[in-house]
Length: 280
Image (cartoon, rainbow, N blue to C red; front, side, top):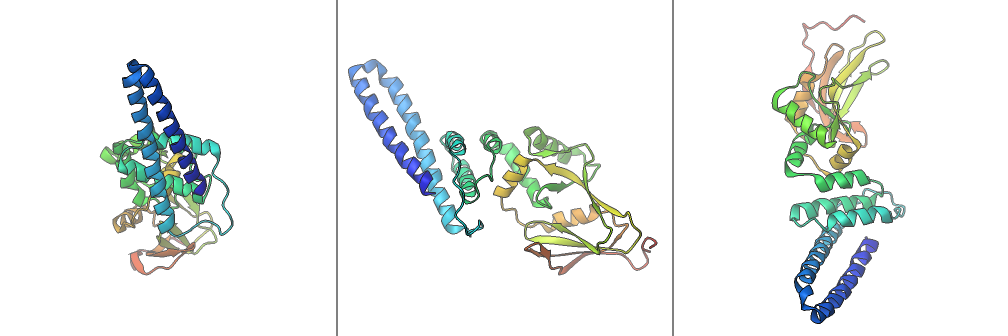
C-alpha cells in the first residue's frame, strides 16, 4: 500500500510541475489558454479520482480482516499498476471508486487476484450488466457454478445470454452441468460462501452420478464474484434443491460452512417414507 501511495504522491509533484510549466506558456501565448485549461482540468480530475481510490483502499485494508498469508506478500506488478491507474483515473463516481478500491485492496493482499482482462472488463462494465450479475451471484455454488434448470427460458435466459455476451459466464443454452460421481461417498457438499447443503446419498450400485445443471463463471466472472459479498439467500437454496435429481438422495440439509466443512442444522428435503429407494 505504501508503494501505491508513494506513486500517487509522486504523481502530485509531477502534476504541479506540469501545471506551473503550462501556466508560463499561457502567459507567453494567450492563445493556448483554453487548451491548457482543458488539459489541466483533465489532469487534476484524474489525479483526484486516483487519490480518492487510494484513500478508500486504505480504509478497506484497515477495516477488513487480513486473509492473506502471514508471510510478506509479493509486490504488485508494475505492468498491472500501470493499467490499473489508467482505468482508475477515469472513475469519477463514488460507486466506481469504491469498486476500483476493492480491486486494488484485493491485489495488494494477493497479487494476481485480478487479471488485466478483468481490469478491462471492469472499465467497460455498465450498470445494466452489473445489476444482472449481482442478481445471480447469491446462487453461486463451488465459487464458479450458477445452478440453472436445463429448460430455462424467458427473462432469466435473456439475462444469462447478456452476461455471456459480456464474458462473465459460459454455457448458456448448452445444457452444461457439473456431474459428481457418488461411488464411495455417503454425502455430497454443495457450498455457498458461508452456508452449504449436505446431500445424503442412498447406498446403491456403482456408477451412480448426480448432475447439477447450470452455467459456469468465466475467469473474469470468478474474479468479479470474488470482489462481491453476496448474502446467503434461502430461496436460492430451495431452487437448487428442486433441481437436484433425487434418485439416489436420502435427504438434503443446510448448515454453516466453515473451513471446508458443513454443519447441517436445517432440513430442506427428506425422502418420503413411501418413496422406495432405488435397488442396492
